[in-house]
Every structure is written in C-alpha cells, then in structure tokens.
Length: 431
Image (cartoon, rainbow, N blue to C red):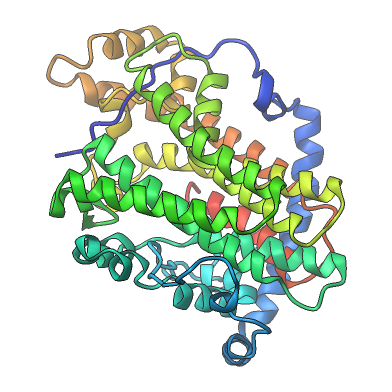
C-alpha cells in the first residue's frame, strides 16, 4: 500500500508573510546573495577537494580521537542507566566529488569528514537503547535503526558545534553538544516511526516499516519511547534555552501533522502556509538543533540566531527538493509511485507553482475531482512537471542562498566548509 498522506491543494497568492517572510527575496537581493553564496561554495569545495586525498589519514586520527575523548557521554550524570542504539540513518556514499569545469559532484563522506569521529562515538552511545531497556521492542529495534539514510541532522549538530567552538576558542566540543546530537537523532527517528503509522506506509528507504512488520501498537510504543527518552536526556542538559528550543520542535511536529491532515485537497492553501507546514515538519528540528549546538559553545546571540536561520533555510530547501523529486525521479529511484504526493492530495511547492500558470485551472479541476477518471493523475503530473518544477527549483535555491548567507559570522575552517558544502549537496539532487 502506498503512503496515504494527508493533503494540501493550493493556489499561490500573496507574497509570504510572518515566520517565513524572508523567503520572498527580491531579485536584486537574490542576485547579490547568490553571487556571495557561490563564492563561498567554491572556496568550500576547493578545501574539501584538497582534503580528499588525506581522508584515510584524517579518519584514522579521528578514530584515535574518539578513544581519547575527555569524558564519555556514558559518564555524564544525566540518567540512572545509559544504554545505546544504532542510528536510523546511513551515510549515502553513492555520489562522488568530482569537480570539473566549475561543477562539483559532492560526496557526503567528504562533507562529514570533520565530524567522522564524533559520529562514530554517537553511534556507539546510541546502539540498542530500545531493545535493551524494553524487551517488547527488541525485535523492532534493528528495523527502526537499520534502514538507510544520511544522518544529516546529527552531522549538522556536530558541524555547528565544531564551527562555533572554533569561534569561541574552545579546544573541543562539549559533552552536552554530543548529547544534543543523540537527542536530535532520537526525535527524528521517533517522528519517522509515527509518520509511517499516520501515512500507512509499507516501506521506508526500501525496508518494511515497523507497523507493517510488528503492528501499529509496537510502532507507536517505539516512537513514544524515543520521544520520552529524548525528553529525559533533554531535561538533564540543564539549559533552559535549549530545553525550550527542542521542546518547541515536538510541538511543531504535531502542528505540522494536524495542519496537513486538515487540508486534504484544499485548493485555497497559500505558499506561505505550505512553507509553515514544511517548517514544522522538517526545518524546525534542524533549526533548533543548530542553534542549540551554538548555545553550548557560548557564542554571541547574533551567531546563535544565524545558526537557527541556517538550519531553518537548509531544512526548507531540503523539503522543497524532496517535493521536486516526487515528480522528476522514477518510481524505482523514489521507492514509491511518481507523483504520490499529488495522488494523495498533498499539494507541494511544484504543484502550487503550477496552479498559478495558464493551465492552472485544468490542474485545479483535476485535483478537485481527486483524479476520478483514468488518466487524470497522469495528466496532472504532466502539468506540474511542465509548469511547476522550475519555479520550485528557484525557491529551493532562494532558501539555500539564505542558509549560506547565515554562515558569514563563522570562522573559516573545515567545519564551515562542510556546512557550506552541505547546502550544495542538498541542491545537487535536483540538477
């Protein structure tokens, strides 16, 4: 069964307002930001390319560094019994970094190189937390945390932690920044497990989902446990600013799901409402965790705000890119039928832009009838592919450029270079 996602239909109306008003940037501003961002990207790619030949040496040094950490997370007096589990995401090394003619293909391993040791320590600290504490969930644990993926959220926590620690003159990142990366991964994983129940998804990243294998009860319990465990760890970070930031993320998750469920085949939703939903479901966690990492480096308020903006706009770019790929990739690449969001009424950025074009009325009519006739869905997909993809690409680029501009206050170095490259890595999928 395909994911029966709750839906959005929309016509794009006024410029964005409120929390995402900055997304609507005038053309002159975009030209300046894009030029600045492109220069920053080029410098970052050059540094990453230079580092690639030394990857083996650096990786070995980082592996040693893991064993020489000043204090293990397990030694922190944060919970009565610390146990571990394996992360839900796997790094994707399918892309290569091959710069030719000014165009670079990015390898996620190169981007994550500065925090490879940190990620390994996190994996060791998180392994088996569900199954070891809860025998009922033991059978589900490997499936929850064994599926593919990139673990981008904790990677971003570590990169921001290292970049801001460099700015603050710290010798290393703190134990609380390491714990924050674990919390971020647990919250993300919990949200995926619950999303699969709500969306009735059979598979995720090519693997069967927990509720398909073990039933809805186990899936809900697993997600609830991860939310509860992450909340316990969060409280023990003993920092009210971070507690408020991450707690808001969980509230945003709920708001995003409720708003999506309430807008099924709603042809009156605006682009701003789409961005608000995307913020709540995707960007909120990235933004809050990036800012929280900066908080523990004790940097200035301006830098903390910049890190939130970086995470927010990167998260929005990521979501827009995902929405584009729903139309531009094949069923084999997607792991689900092409245009599945449209088929289930979840009207995303490419659809919203297509609705404002000349054939928007035809598309609106097809959506209103929920593709009741044979060929209706295929016609709607064709309209969106022809009329909405390019505008959506521009939106993703705008969000990416705003993410890049938020890095201006960080010192040059490996961590900043990877934060810059991460933005281009996200965009690379749509070109």
